[in-house]
Length: 128
Image (tube, rainbow, N blue to C red; front, side):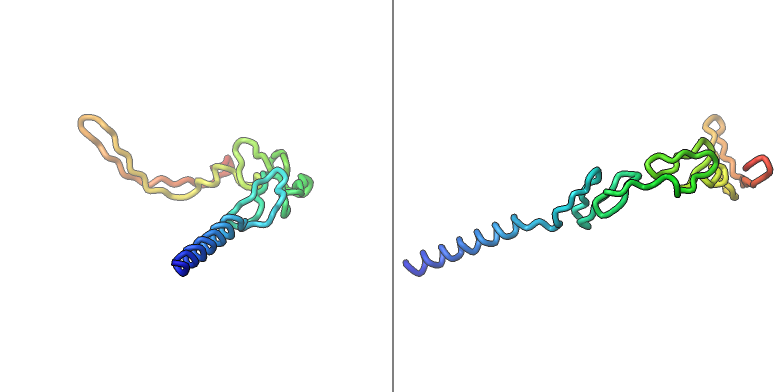
C-alpha cells in the first residue's frame, strides 16, 4: 500500500510540474510594439502603416518616398490621386489593363446568345 501511495504521489507531482512548466512558458520575449501589435507566430512587431523598426518606434519620413504624379505623403506612404497606383503612384491605373483578352459574353433572353471575341487595350498618346 505504501508503494502505491508513493507511486500516486510521484505521478501527481510529475503532472503538476509538467502542467506548471508548459502553462508558464511564453514563446515570445516581452516586446513593446508601441502602436503596432505583437505577432505571436514570429515574435515580431507588426507595425501600422508609416512606422517601422523592431518596436515600431520609427516613423517613416515622407521626404524620401518619391511620390509622383501629384501624390501626397501621409505617414511615409504615398496617397495616389485618381488614375494612378503603385507604391510611388508612378503607374497609370489604365496601364494595368493593357493587353489582349479573350472575352466571353452570355446574353440572357429568347433566344440565348453567346458571344466570343478578342479585345485588345493599347497605349496611345491619350492614355490607354
